[in-house]
Length: 75
Picture 1: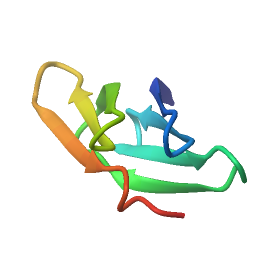
Picture 2: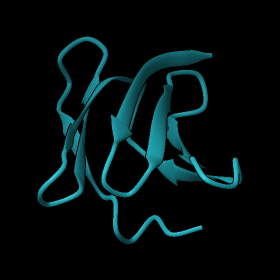
Picture 3: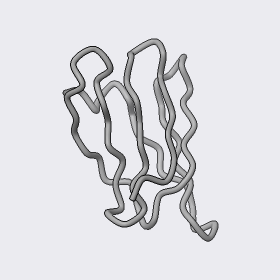
């Protein structure tokens, strides 16, 4: 079940947190191809730093933050 969405306008990637599967779906905006990246337990809100291309994923219940390197989540 999708829980949060964020966009990196520089890399044209969309990030969708999936609480039930404990991952983030990465969508390549130009091709609509997807991949998934592990994101800890029950990922929720997302934030993107467009300078470093790091994606910050909070966890439901305040159980931490996962940081994803957006440049390594290549499709």
